[in-house]
Length: 228
Image (cartoon, rainbow, N blue to C red; front, top):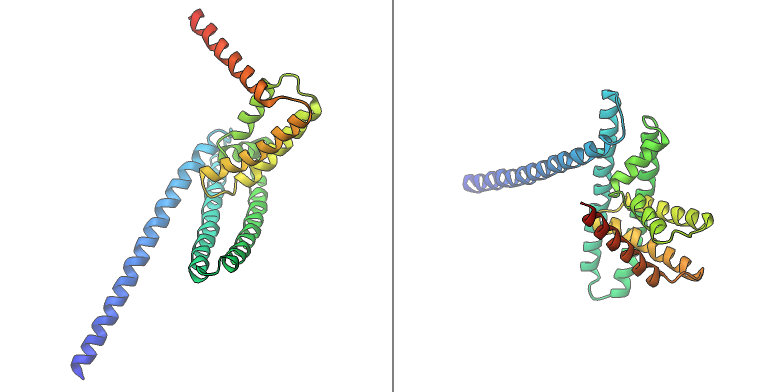
């Protein structure tokens, strides 16, 4: 009986120790991720022209918090998707249906987080600075792409420019909440496809215009090199 008790106690202590190690590893991982996103947030805030140190820190923390919160939603969804796929590995139709539900639920959480986050930024930043945060979280793809379209197609109408900007802006809102660089770029890729179709229907040969633009860029670089 005494031996059994010792074995029981030892097993219990071992289990506690194992749990403690797992928790410690999780806490360390969380702390490391927090450090990474805080540094990322700091780079974004540095470009906003925030002079007040208190406001600077509040905005930095708000951005870092958003990254952490988004990560929780994405990781939670991915873990559940993995379980569902394993559970219904012999029933693809059922698995796909369940995955779709999980993704829809995650999308609702992301939309709620997004709205709350923008409201939080609005307490400390003006509209132009919030634009800076959005572009910072999406690698500046919107302004770069919008500028590219205008340079490639100098004869765009004001209506076309407005529509292009509207779609790129919508893409950015989704890209802000995406879980990786690839998925952020994928959102812009999706909307660029929509823009290209829109312009093609307007009679613009996108392939031809794209090649002509590249030639202009190449010529400009050659001219600059020759001048130096």
